[in-house]
Amino acid sequence: VSKQKKRFDNDGYSLDLAYITENIIAMGYPSQNYEKIFRNSMKEVYNFLNERHKNHYKVYNLCSERKYQKNCFDGMFEEYPFDDHQPPTLQLIYKFCESINQWLNQHPYNVVAVHCKAGKGRTGVMICCYLLFSGQFEKAYDAIRYYGIMRTKNKKGVTIPSQIRYITYFQIALNNQWNLENFPEIELKLKVIKLITVPNFNLFGGCRAFLSKKLQK
Image (cartoon, rainbow, N blue to C red; front, side):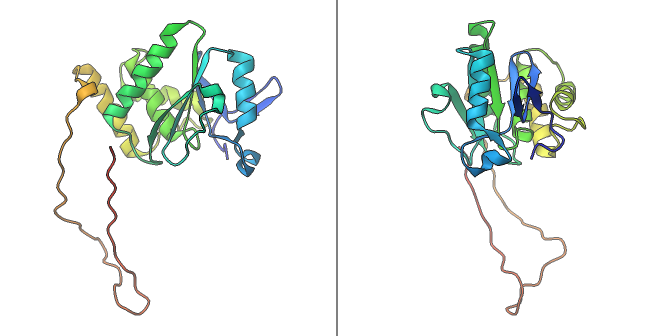
């Protein structure tokens, strides 16, 4: 599953996990069922964090499709969910960055472990935004490039255009000192759906069109 992602193979551990900075870890989802055969094992991740960062770690789960039980990681986790292959809202990014900043500033030994399902795209978006938020990088391009180098072997960390775009939006918001804590909602109206190369809609083996709408708060 880790494919081109860098792994932590040391001290008896073999985990889909990489240190992006000394106190920011990117990793794949910690699994408890059969998925631990090909994903990170929850138990191994727990042991790893307690062995290296006992009482000084917090886990951030970005999966909208997978929630933690309350006792996971002894309760030292927060969830900032958004869908796979999609960008987060600017408000969600801001809340995530504020939370991480507060935790890391509480003690010099504190670390965060951030993950989505694969621990690359969504994880990269939020980590890149925090690197901008904390002043470690000034430009989205540089943060994305750095994350790609630290997380992957082929230097391709965040690759989905909409996710890259939202990292850039966040940079613009920071540069212009926008109030993201109370950012106004924008009303959008869908007026036209245009299909290029219209599919076969007949009743004999053709397709059936439908429109799905999801509201994200």
